[in-house]
Length: 83
Image 1 (cartoon, rainbow, N blue to C red):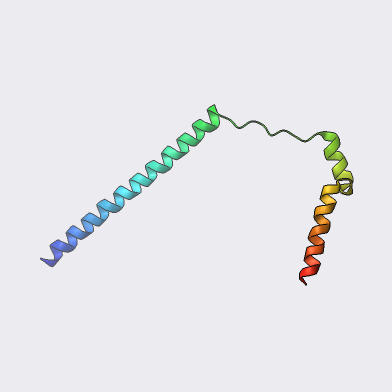
Image 2: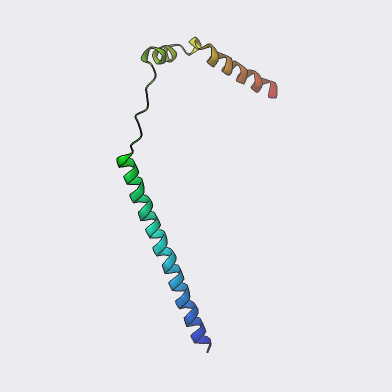
């Protein structure tokens, strides 16, 4: 009697786990296919590059941006006051 119940339990466990594994494999496959379809038919637009003069000016002299200087100064001031 006990062996039959254990056999049924193992059989039920294997069917259940097999069903979950098959479902998850199909889910991964469907997600991969949908991702490739979206990438193929709806590509993301290329990001716009910043204006060359402004980027070059900021790269050459970061102090040229007064807002950046103010943010850095405030951060340093706050850091020193916490000590």
